[in-house]
Image: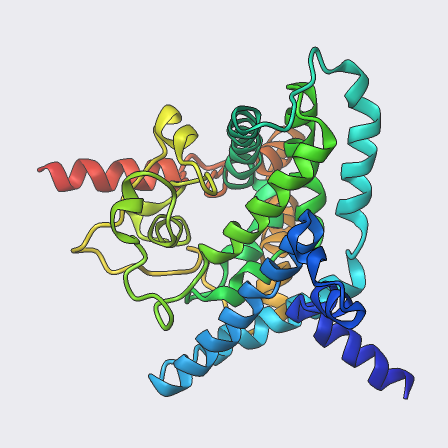
Length: 329
């Protein structure tokens, strides 16, 4: 019975309906007007869309079963191994750095806009480093390994990535005056929208979302980010507001004449949990072991993926620039 109860709680937790169920059971429906009540109604949206997306996949005969299977295993593994680490790191960073903030932002519409721009800056830094530093890419590559896009991909993360990401994002926000209450509101919005932009073509064929494609980062932009096509590599690092991608020159629209190829450039078995979860770490260890000299061993850790001690570099920047130059001829 204890196993069944645990399984029931996990299913309820995954579906995100526990908060709403508690409110409904009390009969205090006015609670849905509070922040907790609003979030309780929003939490189930992404899991329910994921289920609908999977059902439509079977209807369209595009079930993407390999991607769903591995991402489900990753979700279970992360629930066991890294459940509370990110929360603990956020709490620690807030307690440590909040006294050093030069000012405190309030919770008004203009401070919320300011706060989200600051959050996106922190997100850009973490995400950029995740693609440009080989060690951090080992943590982030699990998220890019799936060779198709669907909502289950939002659960495909190495368990240490969230703590590392939240340390950077929380540090930036707290030091720039974002008080914890506002930070948690932003994190909720960001987490919900960040899951939505992984929606697959089974649910939303054209991810550009009409005129919104010019205003915010859409599923189309994030599909580009997950692509291994040379033009698309290492672009669109933001989550909702693409302001920082435009500032730093990493913004890229989806091209109608380029079919997106998802996944990473390393040859791998995307249906193998070990290869998806630990493959890049294993590859890095091998490169370090075979590299001549201590300097080269350290460089493999901190240089971008694709860097080689032989000089035959195949980093995303080089591959993309070569592609752009070739298309100009």
